Length: 173
Length: 154
Image 1 (spheres, helix red, strand yellow):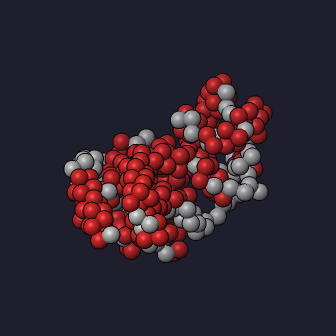
Image 2 (image 1 turned 90 degrees about the horizontal axis):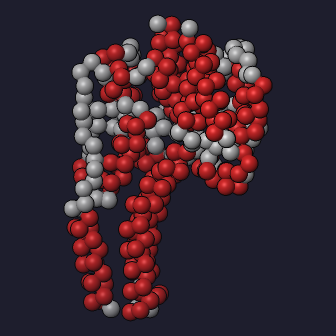
């Protein structure tokens, strides 16, 4: 689930840097313990750095519990052109649909109900899509390592962003 | 055996002392007059209190740092969260955002708070006043959606 959200990638990589020092510390202690002491007496000292590491990891996954609220008012607002729909189908729909197994992806964007969103919500979501595509945050790297053919080509990313920007501008008029 | 425990304790203490000298990079507050959301947007008092209690310690220029945020390694985590938080949303620089960006952010606020992703669990653990009830979450969600409508109509 965390692999679906670019924020977690980022937090995890920063976290990894922070964790390095604790990993070194951990290895040092383990080494010391094996060399100088009987393992059964050294539980606490192995545990301490492990707990420190676990604490740091937890901060990255700390916000994963859910608390659903809110509802959507149906209202057909825009139509998606075929070539954009094709991009959605290829690279996005697999996670961003109401039957998806990824809770996070579902909560962020439901492409099967996208055109029913209100103008205001659409402007928000389209701006998020444009930003996400521009920053190359979606589809997530972890997902692409399994399904490299689902990646957006440069041309597709460009067309998707231009469409999102133009549709937003039209809606803002 | 006792000697080794002593050595280890001194080792940990040493590490703890040494890491205090690593700069945390904790960002300071640099409020800009006229840019704060409280000076620009309409915020009912009840929502205002919730925003200040649950959001402003990362998403503003009026961050209150608790004592433990001055002690490494916690200081690094706090610095990281505030930097990352402000990158995504800085209520203290609300006035700098375009109409479209404001609407985008308000949509994200409604999603993140409504779905329970924000505030982060680690923050709630340390700040019980940020532990929003469902009703309080709904207040924020409704406020964000109404404000987005208002900005759209402008």
